[in-house]
Amino acid sequence: MTQWLIPPPETPSLPIVGSDHRYAVRRILCVGQNYADHAREMGADPDRPAPFFFSKPAMALVTDGRDPAYPSMTGNLHHEVELVLALGEGAAIIGMAVGCDLTRRDLQAEAKARGRPWDAAKGFDQSAPCGALTPGSGPEASAGIRLSVNGEGRQSARLSDMIWASHEIVEQAARLWNLGPGDLIFTGTPAGVGPVRTGDRVEAVVEGLAPLSFTMGPPWT
Ligand code: MN
Image (cartoon, rainbow, N blue to C red):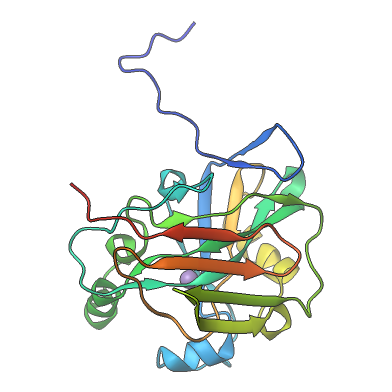
């Protein structure tokens, strides 16, 4: 029996709609710029051939209706509503959820300008609020994806607006990683990203999935 120097950390996980079981998460892959209008607002060409990926640690998840803390070292925290895929054996999509890819936009802009990695901009603690996992193959392509802040609509699109559809994203990611149970994929965000401040109420929806809502907490202490 393994003797741990320090007790192992808790396994990050998502609740599942209609079940007492939980989905254990081992990593989070994220797609950059998967909606043409958001790619344009970020100054990129949306017609480029392949999606690109970055990642967040599994421990970045914020689940079960908890509120994320406002991260340190940023004055421009942004929301990005995203469809989240949960994978099972053989990289099959076994369920979907609504996620928010919280981003230190100022640090991301600096990283882009200097050709540096995005970890501090994207992979910080509590950077991945995520709703409950809805089992199944997900909503229709015509389903709406929306995010509001304090009741004001910020992002609104349809899943059919994604440049790369869910199964195509999994195919592309499977060329780069040995995908399997515990892998979440955030599939990119539509246009309308913008700032979130302490006290803001964020409500994110993908029609057909359990919604995600949180109030942005006070700064880290
Ligand atoms: Mn994103």
